[in-house]
Image (cartoon, rainbow, N blue to C red; front, side, top):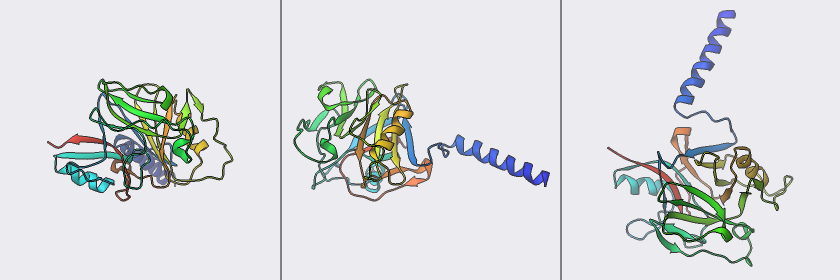
Length: 243
């Protein structure tokens, strides 16, 4: 019995070491989590293909990238969208503003739950999440997407969120870690906005932004999570060149 017990312990330790090596283990079993170091990894935002057609989902993005000898490493839907699949609010791609900033505060829905915010990437490989009212156009911005509400604002959970809320959905979002890396997360099950925001805050994100709800999809094969379906607007993706 002692030998069997020791063997089982060795197997558990071995599995943990192997899975850690390949990025399979996450202490956050309720979330699909991916971190990005913009100095080491390539992150881009996508909307339409070369023919001006909405890419729409991760399966189509994989096909699109393959035609360019590129591999899809990670992808998640990057914000809310209109009925035609166009981004709701600001969208900047390759330094070009495709959709202008939406500063309206009179409409309804999560997007307009104030403060909402912007997630953007600069030429010097910095990822930033800020309130919409604090966003300033800059030639250094390469990609940007607007969404709402903010989840974490200056290290505080959005004041409107309630821990005992009955509004439960699948949710995905992005935050900036203390070391400057980006933290992407999608809940595997239904969750409140408060609990989702608390996840980012507990990870040390001073600011974090809600991207979307029940339509959320994440493609992350390194974590055995390969959602390719769906139909949405902006897609945030990590890619790499195929040699």
